[in-house]
Length: 293
Image (cartoon, rainbow, N blue to C red):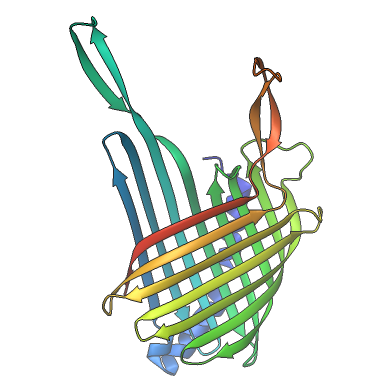
């Protein structure tokens, strides 16, 4: 996995700028209500294994850490998903009358995505807050080895009750992307404008709905608009375990490039390749077991 050292330094400096205000808030929480400063953790695990005539292996792991105070919130989230699939290959060794059959399966990766995100939010009033954060993601099947995003801006808290929370954020972003196949007409680093909404709703005492929509516009290329929509429904099994079904839709109006073999109209290979865009929309449906502690 290629990850330029300078991007790691930028990410480290960005996350490193969070602790000073966070420490102040910890002290504030400890002097007031200790429960208000407690960390909340959750871990997600999703597995799928099949074997026989076909082989499929899917492994997903994620985790979230969040801490809230009277005036702020800090959160970290990391995770990954990898899927390998393949069919069983059979070979007969011997003669037509006398042979033995051997079989093997060689699954190949068909989906892979890893991410790391950190966000800090500080409230100035009941409805206005400052937000900053950093995120790193790797998805070679979507066309990029690494994507580092930095964001800073303000937001509004529209609704906050015991069962419902709705907020919006508006910020300026900087994105540095390392593609699998370099696009000669596309810059690897660019600024942007981001608008996002975060909706959480407690449907019943044991069921919760959460939806997040992020729109990111590239300021150097107006056609390069990206949208990331994630929604999930979690149903509690008990006070510590829950089952969560999630759907994520990622849309990129100017997707990364890939190489495709060039053939003549009759289907004869030419032995050369050309650059073509990947699909604009990726969707992921997951069912995971969630542990809260």
